Amino acid sequence: MKLYALNMIQPVGEVPPPEVLEPVMAELAEIRRDLEASEEWVFGRGLHQPEASTVVRLRDEEVIATDGPWTEGKEFVGGIIIIQAEDLDAALKVAARYARVTGLPMEVRPFQGEA
View 1 (spheres, rainbow, N blue to C red):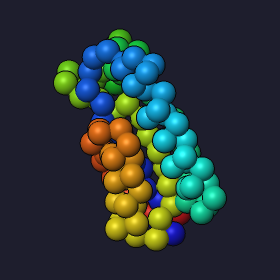
View 2: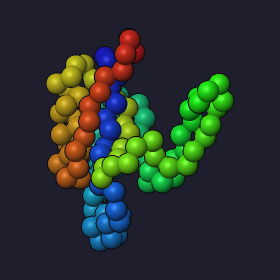
View 3: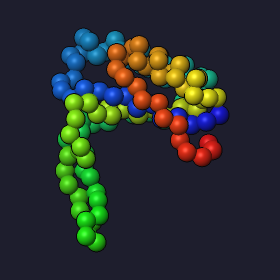
View 4: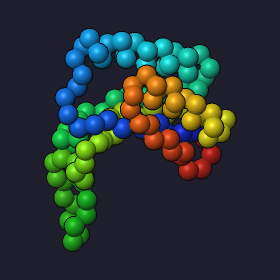
């Protein structure tokens, strides 16, 4: 089994109202239960909006922390799911389930090295 990160790409803006969001969250919980049952689930969590981030970088031998995202954009990584999958095709099938439920793009990226 290999480890894959599934990054949920969200648009910057308002969170959908509860009547839209609650059925989606229920379906996402079902996907998680399926992944847990098949022992593919490793970890997953949503992230706060980009303005909640802090960037730490080295500038002329000094470490500086600045508020906000490291880059401006219309989309951001809104959540990350770590799974174990046999191969990229299996990971893409899981990402497709998330994309179908949320309507959001999913970036699938393997981890370097062995699990």
